[in-house]
Image (cartoon, rainbow over all chains, first blue to last red; front, top):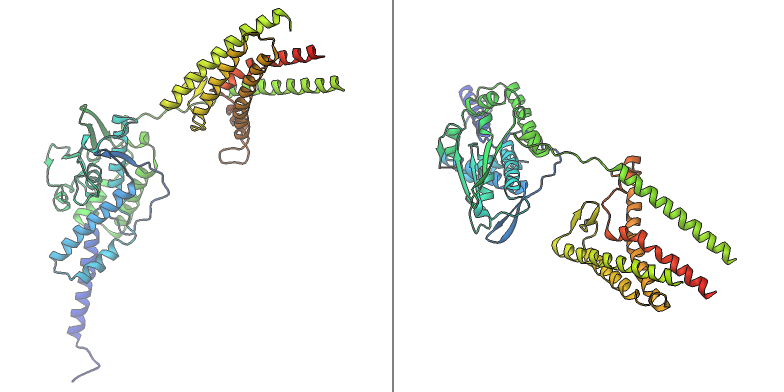
Length: 308
Length: 151
């Protein structure tokens, strides 16, 4: 048996195999569109939950619920993908653990859909709590993040917890194409060329027929975002600098949907007028109060003097 | 207390009692329906919703006490009813004023409020008891008259 020296051919093959493995892992990382590996955590934000009634039971849906659901669905999709590549369960677990480490599922698409739904519901139902079955969404955005967020709210997605009644979700792309298969695999076909018109969701109150369209404003999505996305996510021809730039833009879009007010994000939403504090009214009351207390003091002192 | 003063007291506290009753009824309806704000009148119970029904009961009692005191108003027991009704208003209005004073001093994110914020915290709307407060002070005149008569 020979020991010590390894044949040059074997070393080269091993190195090649390792490089290929590393490349394939990197490409898997990029294909999961909902996640941006290396993205920073979102800043502190405060978003009220979407409150709906499901067959009379009140449900509060938070952005974290939506994020977790989206995360789980993407993990499942990834698992199926890796299974088809004949990976062992152990390998699959390792890849998923590595790729989804620290991921909250709160991405630009899921946060956009959440904000759009929140706004649409408040516009159509006001202070009322909508029944889940009365909600219908028509989405123009064929991404897993936005779709799964709306599936969670309508209860139409697989594995949504405690669903008694279902709303309706329809996907009609800006070019009029209706997409009925909302699986991640199928959605990928429609995610190649996207632009601002895809950042659009129509919310419908089925019982009255009222509808409200939410369209993202120009300027919310940074310039060059769509081209970069295509290079990074679809064509995979982006340079490391371009990937880094896309990551920064991805974070900026997500953070905008998590932190900015509706009128800065969506078309047709007017900024509420800030009420000026009524300083004059307050000053008049305060003066009366001071004079009144002064008179009370004088009166009580006079009474004391009289008593003495 | 002369006859003229007694007559004035009777008319005055009848009107005040009726107004207090109306306010009480409005607050009772408001507490059942979640409160309302109408112009400078605040029955929303925004600061303390649990106290709103109590305020309604107090106002209704004030109205009844004033109205039941007007017959033979110069008699000391009758006058005592009006005094008691006025004290009830003073307690509730005093609490409302104290709440304003206390909340006007600290700022939202600073130790002390700005002058603008300080004055704005005294701005309308006001609870019904605060509107009744100055009118209820008339009873002080009758107390003093009663005291003079005792001497």
